[in-house]
Image (spheres, rainbow, N blue to C red):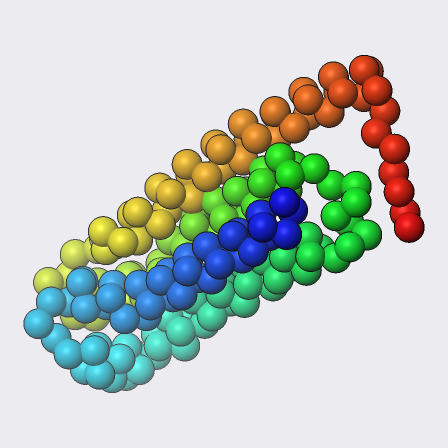
Length: 170
């Protein structure tokens, strides 16, 4: 069961990271500067000196959450951990991981949104509808993670009082 949780969380995290990065680098600039081709947007940002920050933020976000997700999946797929972990605990951690990645997608898009709004017409800020869905989905998953963590803590405490779980390290 833990391997299934790990794989599902891993696949969902890849989807969030890919969609969030595309949103930050492609769809949001086009959304904030409608009618202006993407190469023109990038040329303008390059001329103003903002392009590096606009490109680094999504890359850092992608690498940070990708690394955390990789560790999470590898730990769940490792046999020694599978013996002692509980699926509800793994699901709580997975929901927290997905929630954190989703919520902080706004950070990866912030520099791009600011720069495009400052440099190109119509000069209004904002985010794409997909960006809003990713961030709100992240917040919702953090609430789910908290609830699952509470369930894991309460059931673990109760089961420890009833009968301790034997650990087989073989």
